[in-house]
Amino acid sequence: MKTKILVLLTLILFSFYGYAADKKIYTWKDKNGAVVFSDTPKVGAQEVKLTSQILSMPTTNTSILDETKPIAKKSFKIEVASPANEETVRENTGSVYVTSRVSPRFENGFKIQLFVDGTAYSAPGSSSTFALRNVDRGEHSLQVKLYDPKGNVLSVSPTSVFFMHRQSAL
Image (cartoon, rainbow, N blue to C red; front, side):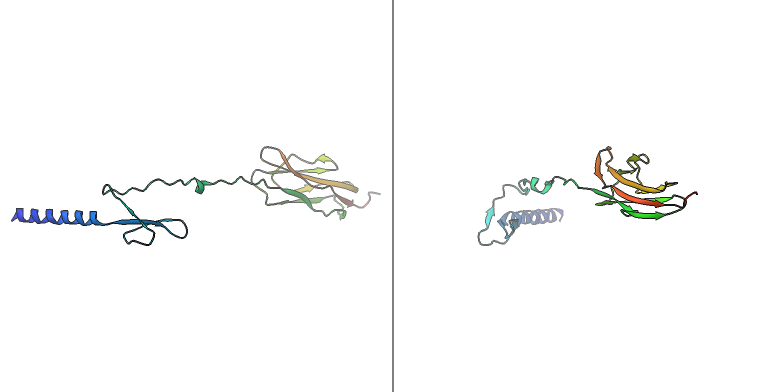
């Protein structure tokens, strides 16, 4: 009884092996140029000759998929947003808040430095807003510079002028 079952199982296994070996595989390229494999023939398809039961596809050059485009260098622009050019600031304490605007977007590691009347107001920092205190009466010029993380100047704003109006001490 055991031998009959063993013989039957062996015959079944060989019949599957023979069935799989009789299958034919066809290949062609579709309208997009992709290689297609099928067991159903199609006009223009070529039969793939299998030399073993292990099917391996040839390697395909995928280097076109790894295309790295050169990174376009961004052109940054910085400007004094407030006070507006030729604006009069009326503040008896002499306080002025200077804000700058960077475009495109301000990036991590960038620094901004404010110049008042041609002199650096403070060391370059990450804030785009500056608070000036006790500014004297009269005309003052403002300019801001944008630096990259390595300290290279990326952009310099045009000079902006404002007028400080304070009550006279007399």
